[in-house]
Image 1 (cartoon, rainbow, N blue to C red):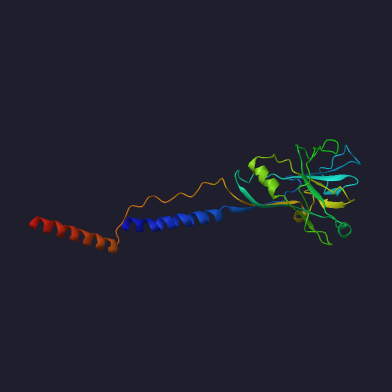
Image 2: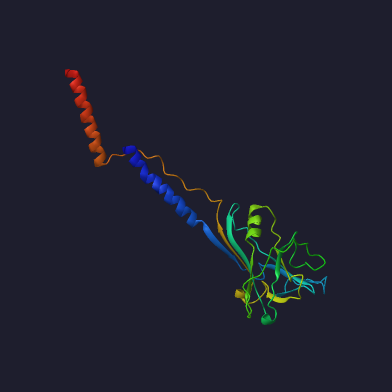
Length: 238
């Protein structure tokens, strides 16, 4: 009886520590690098051998075509983490009310260098993984859900070669997007990731308790000794 009661508190403590542990290791990573740390570049078929790695904007359309390349360093997220949500967010620069069309986000299939990549040297890219939301008649942050892509990168299923922004194939979309070289920090591209860290050590369970006697427990134990002693004395005299 006393031993079971002595285990109640440690079990409750373990359960609470697990719950609190999970809350502590839920985190948000917001990446919005500047021109020195950021990696993005426009590429255009019009000037297929020209690099735009230091340009402050990315021009994106289909008929040109003009595409934008963006890559973020996500090494801060521990391997084994669970990505609960991730969004790529890019801000329109100008002429926004006249171009209320979705643009697409793709994944690059190979590495590229910001300061040398051109239309003729850009890596291939896969099918669209989504189109933007968040657009109104003003110049807005266009938001892309990239949760699955980030999870695959963290899990090592696919390498991180960044994103490619294009216009959809059935329309002449033109977007002007600020790059990481934009002088206004708040207008640069963002990668926002909510995750639960899975690589952290589990909580240390409490040591097996050594039964201790409360006044109540001592009373019961004393009573048992009295009963046992009485019975033994009775058997002796009988």
